[in-house]
Image 1: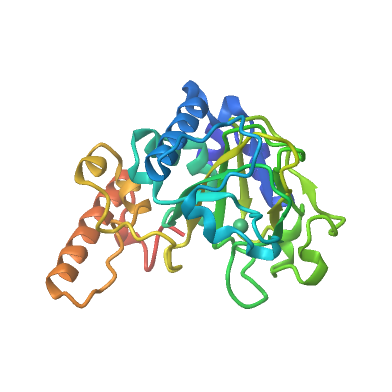
Image 2 (image 1 turned 90 degrees about the vertical axis):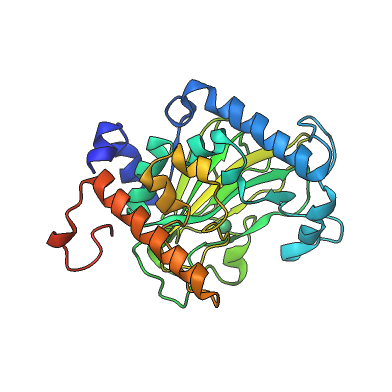
Length: 309
Ligand SMILES: [Fe+2]
């Protein structure tokens, strides 16, 4: 709450409590031209991975070769995709992604929802062109109903191009996080759920939502591309979509805080069949946690269990 107050985010935290989502405007979310630098970096990664830089003004579906997996998914007609393309593991693709992850306002909101011990589920760029199929409503929190009312996962999405209904923006059902369950039947359909609304906001906004909040996306009626950078945090007992423990380069860790190391799985020590590697992972986890405790000023002697919840 100290961070929330000192960063002037009180009204946004209240909105998260009440509606299950909030939107930080570009001047708060993306200082120092962060939006333009992130957009450029995402397009560069796409060029590197797909061999061709995406054309933001293209007037056709965006479907680089490896995006085939999403065609026909989630009720889409053959040849259509509700997603476009998804590029993951971006945290090791350059300093601007580290900056996006460690953005103080982003961390304040993620900590508000999933605590100081939460880790990165994924950092992914979604690029979507004109399409016919909406992304059905769902919540990201997994498990049987009722879901925990305490957020076990949270999503922070940088809109790197303008979000409007025509441009295929996010859809949410305000207040749905309080239902603690997945939507069922026609509740899942954006077009048929009368409580679903379009989250319209300018490029550079940061949209944040609770793991239980029902969300999906409208299809993109207009030309051009929608580009977004999605950062998902989960509580540390949940299996992540990316495995980073042994994959973050040492120079990246050295130039960042202990919290960055915790978020990127360096304090996790999943046991592996290779005993030597297990010992290395355990030693690394102890070292990173110790540095994190110091960074936070936490005296572990005062706690019977995790101080970070
Ligand atoms: Fe989702």
